[in-house]
Length: 448
Image 1 (cartoon, rainbow, N blue to C red):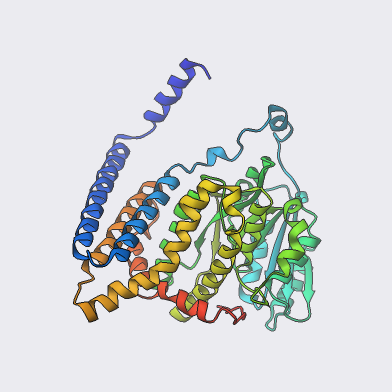
Image 2: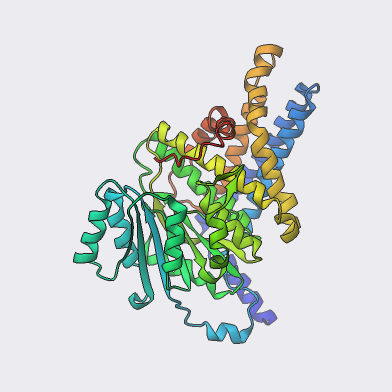
């Protein structure tokens, strides 16, 4: 690139914003700096008030630093690095990159949702002769089987149906689907999820780079407007993908390519498929965390994993507290077991990510319920210490996250619910880890 072209590029990027946009982003920057000042001030007040509680002080400082580091890493996320450092000859060969793609959709008692999922698969903006849709009916007891065969007979004769007579579990369904898939790329979908057809190519495009083993799409709840609880989850989903996975993707080390909408290079996962299928923990088969476990195997095999916000997916989130708690318990169990497994290799594969992100995340997640118990319950009841600064610190960090939220997605209307999610996480969801670990030997799936 010449100096002249570089100047032209800088000039173009500088003036692509309107006056109102420049004012908007300047205001957000000022707000962000003010929030940083308030967070530092709050932490100093916390330190002065808990001089006899060094562990709580260390925890609050570490959590704040960790949250800020993730925001900074997310700021460096860019889809422009999808295809990076490839040899010119390889780029020329993959100019029209359209590999055969197979959808694999395990389902169990999803009669009301499965038709839409299948239809969206066939509607993908991709050559129809290069698409394959495989659905695994995992011994459903509702009308799922009838819906599948009706669709095959009346609308999609090319639909491949694998029909389990008895329920075997999602992993077995996924493994059977991967084995049957003819595609070079396998797209894994939950039965109540789908990828927006117009964005489908964006999920496949990163595989141009032979180093990419798995790609995660951006997912939002389709039922976000159902009630207050689903709106909170919509805010959480956005943060989970656009902040957490984006931060991980900046280092091509996404630790969980979400089961609701991700793609895998088949040649990468098939050699370990049986090992993944029969994973055990404390002598029993692992029935949750299948997506995180499969992603860990991709990383372990020295391939890169990434997230793209250009491929958009929708899924169904829990609509009541009981469903949400079941889901969270399942997720916590999967996170715990797979974090233990990942800790065995990640420090060798990527020491920087391991010691600046992965191990701090484990510490923060495991210590949060204990510290929240101390700050919110033990200290006020037994020592007369107010939890004000602890609560204020939580909401100030949430405010900083919201500032970033608004900067990257002005059209997203769920940002106010970040505060509600922070509150419910502080007083309820963080404690779910206790129950998840206490019942770790209960391997029931915990359906919605």
